[in-house]
Length: 300
Image (cartoon, rainbow, N blue to C red; front, top):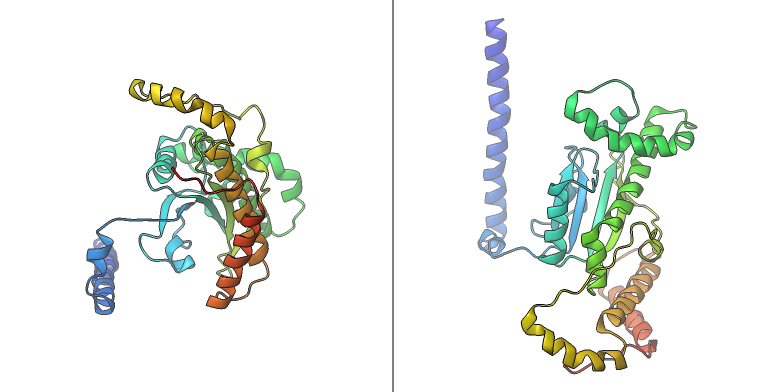
């Protein structure tokens, strides 16, 4: 028994050492390509997306999207759940929106998810895990008639993973931080992805684009604009001017909506991303914006 323990300990230490050696190899590779790579990385991050994914080791966001450090702000937990009262994920969402100024939030689930599979069974997995999986069980309960029509267990797990992503997208839309961002003129789009472990491809789920506008009134929030006292007078002086013209926030939201709609339409049929195609997309989107007579550039 003692010899077995020693043997297993040595084996695990070798695996641990492999990770550290991998880091040294990574640094050597990056600095060989660009000696200033890490110095540039240390200057700050400017991610364009917040990705909320599963902790599963088979679904590493940067690797499967072929992105570099600094390009995606990432939060991961078991089964990519967005719990409204989770301080951790809410702090991540707030920091991403208010400080990093991201405009896209992605919920990414995956097939063969152990958390999803466990939520479909009645066997306890222990303490806190059971409490966490209750969030998934609520999704399963809601869609069990559809899911249980599938004969293959892997298909049922994939179906629940799909439904779970949709449910978490809704939870993000309901989030007060996201709603306030829209009302402040910083629109944030929420996307749903399903990473298929068995193929390596990401499926972009069809999520209703009208969700922000059609959100149940139960969850719609209105925020008061609390201005510092020293700015109150300035706000009052500009009040008449604001009443005479469409608000900047509303015009920006309209512009953003047009951009999102047109880019989605144009990119559906695009098979490559060469410069000519990109120029065509830019030209067509610009043409759409020019047709919006209410969109005008203001001199501040």
